[in-house]
Length: 132
Image (tube, rainbow, N blue to C red; front, top):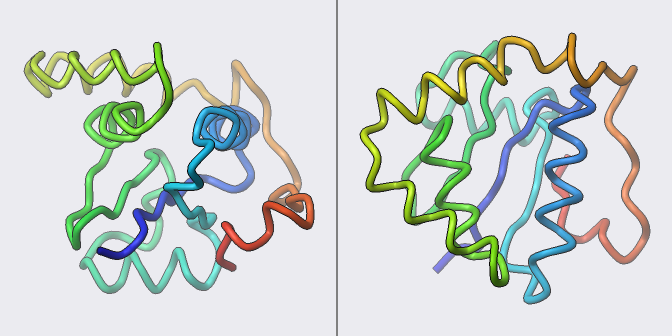
């Protein structure tokens, strides 16, 4: 099995904080990461026929399937350590409801959390988990 890949908006402060949140709760280094704006992110979007401008959602590529919006977030949570893995129970809630909440956060993320000029550079020990 390929290691799941999380694609994120590299200039979004909230998205970067989310990546660091995941890393801190993923002691087995289950996930790899790449910014949507980077070459790996853009190639991945092309491979799955997704818009190259799709920056308003965190994506999860797992078992050759792409998950977006709340489904991606909750599938990621499923692999995090307790108690965060319990959030995956919300996968039982219809996506239309989950994605409405996700959409409000996604639409306001720059306004509420700010924006970076570029992706943060990971520490040397985390660099292996990030793809350009």
